[in-house]
View (cartoon, rainbow, N blue to C red):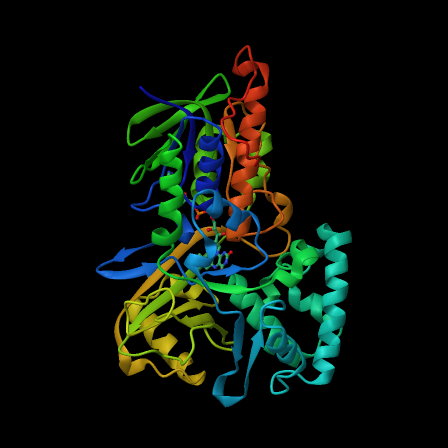
Length: 463
Ligand SMILES: Cc1cc2nc3c(=O)[nH]c(=O)nc-3n(C[C@H](O)[C@H](O)[C@H](O)COP(=O)(O)OP(=O)(O)OC[C@H]3O[C@@H](n4cnc5c(N)ncnc54)[C@H](O)[C@@H]3O)c2cc1C
């Protein structure tokens, strides 16, 4: 039977982060990924001859763990990210638009100007009510987060007297753009949680697009760093079962092949993680909240065009349309294309059952309402559906998220759905991987793992 010190199941950012931490400390890591490429929700691949990604991603300047992982794996974030540093909100049917600078340090005048200008979108009264809502919400995020997770963004905004105009022109773009949900389905905790943890370093905000497919520029190089550290990475290796013995996890099964390990880190996305746990440890009381954690989908459409759809590559929000967020990418992520438009759709559920041609038609219709005319210029397109990869950011779910360390010997969890304060983001996934590595380290210090209890450190870095 093949053997490893630690098996990491899933090579998304959480699994890569955990695998990197453990392999840096001299552990024999085996990373098993079900898909054909590494990266999970931050992957890019060839879909029937067209280069696609799991969906439009933005790197935020106040992330810390994410760029730190890349740096230690030998990747310079500034080489793989183009800092766009602004976002646009477009209202449909010519009702207005606004550009907001999003880089207080790097574009101070545009950032200030965006906040004070844009009167087409926001009146003085709108701003005044929004300011009160944001201040009160952030205070509640810091003092009573559990209560905040019981209400949705729309109800919370109404309770603070936010005008309908501000809800439509700012809160809908933010909730739909960030997690594809309308404000009435979006937890107020999750809303303020996209800013709250970064408050001490809010001035470092920037918004960046990847310069290339995410597997190519980020995930594969991190996997290569794990291999340099002595680890092994296998793709097309779907774990079908956790092996248990006497209440302890002892390894995994991959297509009938059994692989033994001292420790298994389950870093699969939420739905497959729930399935593997249900099968092996479904009766264990500790896992019951996690097994009840609802999931939510994401659907994107990616189009190649005969020329760019917009003059600038930047994140744009389209409130009141199915285009939650979208961007031209032919000068940034997909420079090989004359034009390329990537769109995240909202709400995602109705699109899960639709065929791609229908999705293209609906997207082109709404894009036109936003002044983006692509209907006759699409040379090819692909629809990417992720039916259950996210934990649901609706109210009442945050308390169901599990810690990384579990009470079952030999088993640790990682993934953006596990408990860490950065929600379902690249930063959150990397932090969860670090916390999982730390939990493995602590478990190995316990006497069960041998007489010395020593962790074989080979590097100085701490998770
Ligand atoms: C459309 C979209 C847009 C996004 N935009 C942003 C953004 O702008 N900024 C940001 O910070 N974040 C963004 N995110 C969120 C971010 O991508 C995720 O939070 C993060 O990548 C999650 O990483 P993870 O490792 O926890 O999970 P995943 O990336 O889902 O990784 C889990 C891995 O486990 C594998 N797996 C599953 N089952 C098995 C099995 N049985 N055996 C082996 N392997 C298995 C999967 O194939 C996958 O590779 C976006 C996500 C999407 C989908």
